[in-house]
View 1 (cartoon, rainbow, N blue to C red):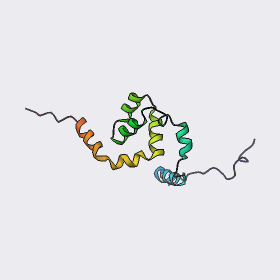
View 2 (cartoon, helix red, strand yellow):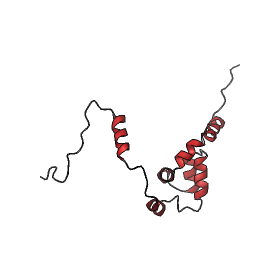
View 3 (cartoon, rainbow, N blue to C red):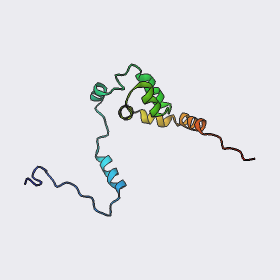
View 4 (cartoon, rainbow, N blue to C red):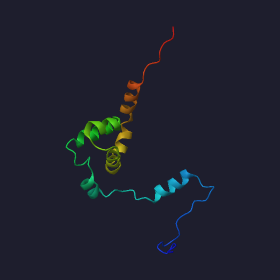
Length: 114
């Protein structure tokens, strides 16, 4: 039996009194904040898509990701990976007014009771 010889340190064990959120936050702080853009552009199906600019515009303008996936035949995970790597989420947040307009337009008015 090999045991933990392959590990440099023992695997981390979470204490019972620590919340999942605090562990997640600690993990997120340890992750690198930058993406290797050269690798991203080489591997990304959105970057190589002929309609890349439209996909990015639709994402920035708060189109539903499901509609983008269906309309451009790209995977949902590829859209989100691309958005994180290229900073589209920040641009989308600055453009929150369009998202609110879309949400209000999709909401059905309440039915009036006689």
